[in-house]
Amino acid sequence: AAQHRRPPARSGPPALAGGLKFDEFMISSIKELSGQIKSKLSEKTSEQAMLVGISGIDASGKGYVTAELDSELRSRSIKTALINVDGWLDLPSVRFGGEDPGRHFYEHALRFEAMFDQLILPLKYDRRISITADHLTETSDRFEPYKYEFIDIDVILLEGIFLFKRRFVGLFDLLISG
Image (cartoon, rainbow, N blue to C red; front, side, top):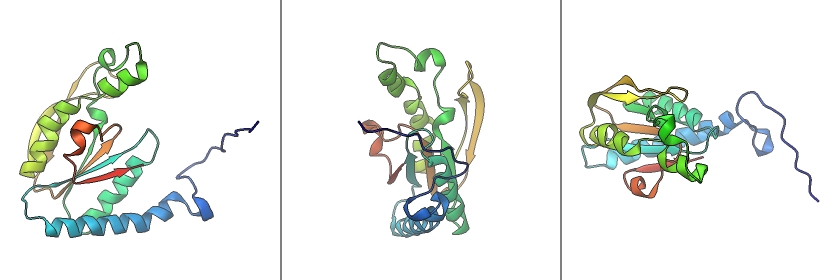
């Protein structure tokens, strides 16, 4: 019988094959990705912002990748809007429950329709937005107002879990999964 050992706890990004740290490996990939986005932007005839989705399971590095990509795009004079889906959580009474808790959470944890209708699609189509939306932290049981204000955005970096559901995947110009 095979024995499974838990890897030792690490501080910082995980090491990859060959001893490279995740961040060392990602630097060239982020620069390459940023160049591809800039090239794709120059080819666009549309006046819309480009929507880039960065999705993966919890602790997969999506926040790290998003922050690095945001920094690299800004260094290339590309105006970005970095948006995390976590603020669009639904109330605990809605997101938890059901006979199949995992499926229930997948289907009800986030207010995707509201997020896309109120924030993401208007920002993509108009490249600007100023709204106050209901925002929720993971441990809260009530919504708080949160102001989103973006002007002349070239690229929307939308980061979070479960982004690439079938009904939303066609809205993205680029998908990055981790």
